[in-house]
Amino acid sequence: MAEIIRMPKMSDTMEEGIISSWLKKVGDKVNSGDILAEVETDKATMELESYDDGILLHIGVKNGESVPVNDVIAIIGEKGENIKEILKEEEAKEEETKEEEAKEEETITIPEINDISKDKRLKASPLAKKIAEEKGINLTNIKGSGDGGRIIKKDIEENTEIISAQSSTNIILPKTIGEESFDEVPISQMRKTISKRLSESKFSSPHFYITMEINMDNCIKGRKKINETSEVKISFNDIIIKATAAALRKHPMINSSYLEDKLRINHHIHIGVAVAVKNGLLVPIIKFADNKSLSHISLEVKNLANKAKNKNLQPSDWEGNTFTISNLGMFGIDEFTAIINPNDSCILAVGGIKNTPIIKNGEIVPGNLMKVTLSCDHRIVDGAMGSAFLQTLKELIEDPIKILV
Image 1 (cartoon, rainbow, N blue to C red):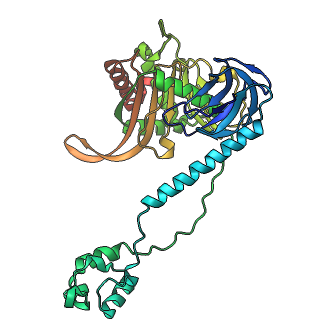
Image 2: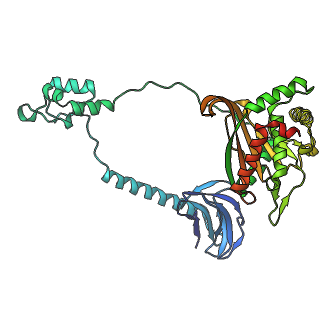
């Protein structure tokens, strides 16, 4: 005798399944325990097992089609059985079931409540009904004071709280005119790489952050004097790079890398400088930054930035960083935190120089402050190490003559 195979409920939340692929075809011999098909549910792709022996006589669903739970998907039986008759009987059973369900629904249907303004059993004066219809008031919530409990105009006027609550639900809001729209653009390979590398860094390296304020008054004066005689214009970013390199020389653990089973303490100082480009972010490197003059650093930064924006950087320009600086001060950002660039142990986020009232010699005077935030990989650098590095950096930037020696 033929057996109907229905879409089983393979998870507690499953309402339908998709036939990913049939592993048997019509006419194949099927044994109990054989896998008939692979079914994609709302949680996983699972195997549909046969519990009967026989011939696969009918497949009612194609690969890729979805089927509600309990719907017929196949029939297994003996060769020569009338499939059309079996399917016809199944359709008849489904119709009977639907009819029975419809009758049951009719017996439990809640009678429709008549509109209040048309309810002849409601005792209310014509004026009270008119007012109720105009103001959208449900008279069943109002107790009548007229003959036989008849609602009159006075009853509506005296039930202001009920009327107010009902009226508030009938406020008509103006229609909002607009059209939903969006653009979808493919993700560039650069953006994919940035996403992958920084996600790995963020979720594998335990980050912590420390922030320090640096008084830039002397640095501003020093830069002005340097640029009066220098053939190359020195920027604040150039000074920060040079000062950072000098500070790293004094704090080698900040210039290190975590390599799973060992720490690499770098003796060379290669500072990556984050540069924004059209499709993302590049980090060209100032190699041996501690051995270079301010003018040398300035020229190299400008050259690498131009190469980055023109997409002319070579792998040698961005490989091998030991520390990274990200400066958003020129964009008006006061302070921020940055994600560590693999395989560094730290990254320095530099904010803008802000004119701020400060206390000097017991008096409030105008000053120029800059905030820097060091993101640290806690597997290598602890709070004391990071703080000591920032203290050294602060001393060098606040007295820039020291980095010229």
